[in-house]
Amino acid sequence: MARADTHTDHGIHGADRNADPITGQPGAHPVGAGVGTTAGGAAAGAAAGMMAGPAGTVAGAVVGGVAGGLAGKGIAESIDPTAEDEYWRENYANRSYYDSSHNYDDYAPAYRHGWESRAKHAERTWDEAEADIRGGWESARANSRLTWEKARHATRDAWDRVSQSFARSRSGSGDRNASC
Image (cartoon, rainbow, N blue to C red):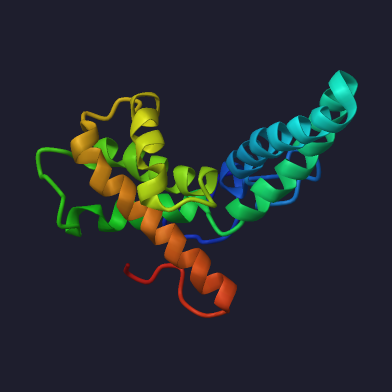
């Protein structure tokens, strides 16, 4: 069966489904769930450990991991990696920081780092999280030729876009693909 071209067919097909590994339903957000699991598990495990000792720490980490995974998934629900990549692919060359000596393959990891960092640091502002985001650039950059100084602008742009999209979705208004 041929896979639909995701640039012209906006249906959910093949690898673009983001299928939930347990239910098979489209729209899974493994990054958000993983971030939530780590953050939630650590918090719950620490709290349980204080109240119930070492056994409580283990139980708390397991229960907290499940609860945190669900919380992280909730944060990531407003981020559709396929739609974000498509948006940036179509718009990156129109941004004020665009440098024609770099192509989309250089900018893509910076955008991805921005939207993934937004999910990871859901309770923090850009200013509060920037040092951690900068610290994660070397592992996030893949084959990008951008230094952090150049990637920072694209990363912040993606961070802001998903922040604004999330705010619009919570208020019940707005077009996810509107220009930011």
